[in-house]
Image (tube, protein in one colour):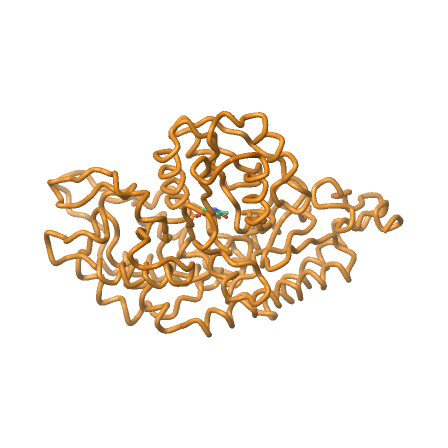
Length: 443
Ligand SMILES: Cc1ncc(COP(=O)(O)O)c(C=O)c1O
């Protein structure tokens, strides 16, 4: 009976393109008592899954608020690999005791990233993580191991995983203010570095903040450290490049993320710009920094990774994609996304809607829509008075236009009484980006 009920629910929610996916609380496993024949047949399970996939397919073109690329094309080719249990347990560079792993693919992917970020094969160490979060946790763990008494400096716009690392490793934390565009406030950083000069510094640099897509100026931070009297053995820089780490290297005038500069680690997500269908990330650091970690006899590995068992299919998905795309494909995707983000930002501004787009970013920040239903329908991400759209590969101009047209239509309704006015957002993203009546008069 229970099964039938939730079955009906599934059928209802496939109605239109715009129905947000609702959690089906009753979709439980093994609802029958032991020893009673399970009433659910595989045919019913197949129908549930088919309907679930239908909903996801319809909702794809409304997936514009989060940095997920939903356009991975090679799942059919790679699906047969699912029949093998592949586990890249532990360190990717050590011999594995069984054949059921994909560490050779993993190292090939890591080599590709090492080359991208300009560090020699024999000088880097890295692994494929479960995502940008694990990469950040690992990068900061390395920093902490090298400089045990170091203070962690992170801007307040950093991803929550950075603050999680501070809690997990019980690190002393200095939170740094941000400029109105989301970049780290260099003056605040400088004054806090000077006050705490007696302790080493572990610094998180954002190569694209989560909400505003702001890129911290690595060269300027290094210069600030030096000006404040920190020698290179008294600081460690981790670069959180979750999204933009795969965009900036392909943009002509963007500053390079490179190990030629005095950084300790870089972490990037693999499911964001690259669109790997399972969450994953790539973490690269300097080999000398991980050489002191311990050996685990049981799995014949070195305890260098945060997670033990790691999914062996992920490196193959990344490897296949990188080979198929090539630098030219990634460059084209980066350019297209930046152009489409500009297109959306310009459209919003022309229509009198406050909007902001950082240089080389694909995150368009704008005035938060008033209606929560609209936010859910378009799966928008919001923070205080602002919302954003991440113009990923797959977000075409057609999708942008349909979002924009609907927003304009809805705004007429939201502000129809003439009394409700768009709010002032000058404090949140700068008066130059705010289009409230007060700022319009002054700009
Ligand atoms: C700047 C930044 N760092 C880290 C992360 C975490 O990445 P993941 O979701 O891959 O764990 C995100 C996610 O949005 C992010 O924007």
